[in-house]
Length: 211
Image (cartoon, rainbow, N blue to C red; front, top):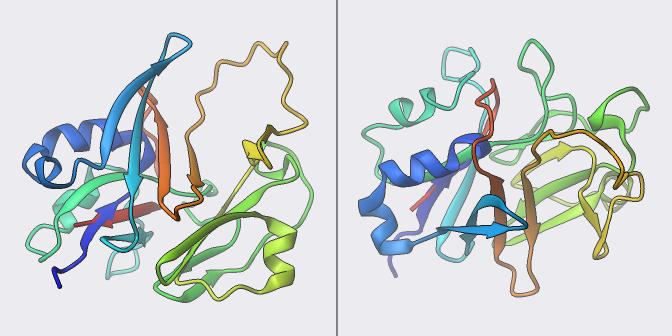
């Protein structure tokens, strides 16, 4: 059986990293571009039976990776090929996740159900997690109650789509032009990362998908 490919996710840089890894993408073609309502997106499709998704927060010396550009260099020489990368979850000014963070089966930051100001606290927020070859996006309190065993998990807010409908607190009259990236799971268990192109690069902790 062929070795699974590994992907690295750092949302804002997915398009540029994909372009720089054209030889790897020729084999797997995980990402494609599309336009919807005059907005450009990159859509990356991950089959967990073939690919590996990883989270990266800190280097071996304990310092955060910080920026998208640092991860490809850090992974040079590894057997798996980095196919694309995107930022994962949300973090504070010290680059610590503000909500649940599980990396390689270890819970490094607890789930956050508190109330407060800003996007993260626009309830309901949610958790994206992977357990074996299954992935899911679930409302935070539901995840906390079911106590799912996760190999990887990250908490973000607000949820963009809930049961097929936009978040109830989104206002169509809003004048905000802030871009949003998203992750979802299809009925066939494939994970879709939808990345708004031309997003600003920001400090992050990161998903990684390899292959």
